[in-house]
Length: 207
Image (cartoon, rainbow, N blue to C red; front, side):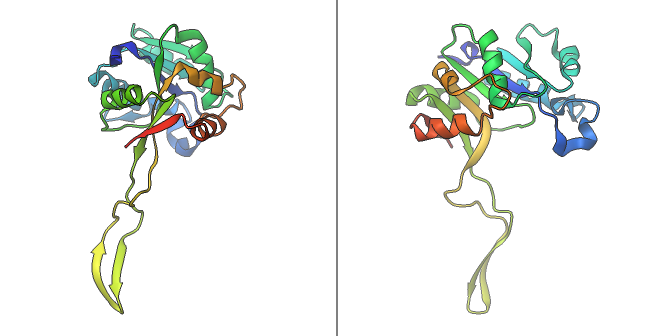
């Protein structure tokens, strides 16, 4: 299994309400960082690891993404509906674009990573589960004080939180995961589908 065989579905359809001052006139993946849309950085990162097939799951202000990325032959643009949640977007786009691929990637259109995504894919395939999520060990929001009586004996500014992992937003799945999804607008990837997959023992974490 090589990265070039694996299509990557990028969720680009949200309203971007938490970044309202930037997303009133454009979708969040088109917000510029260093003069380029964040989406361009995401695709470049995947390409640096050998991935070259992308499916952009569009919704809010889809035309802005179509205009910018529509001429790239490695990118397929799918309008998945303005009201659709993340799971519905993946299900609808996969029905059109997955073809006979056994594995596929999923990520959000507003997140970047320095993780080795090809290594995550290798891990995913080797472990034989249905899904793999990139696990990130975040730093504490607060400095930690170690005290002895009234005296601070150690001051650790925002240490890593031991044994605490969060969803890093970069996934790989076998096509069997589609059975956990629905094309209904209300299907949220991070809720029932991933919760059920974890309970079924089919979700692994690449730390």
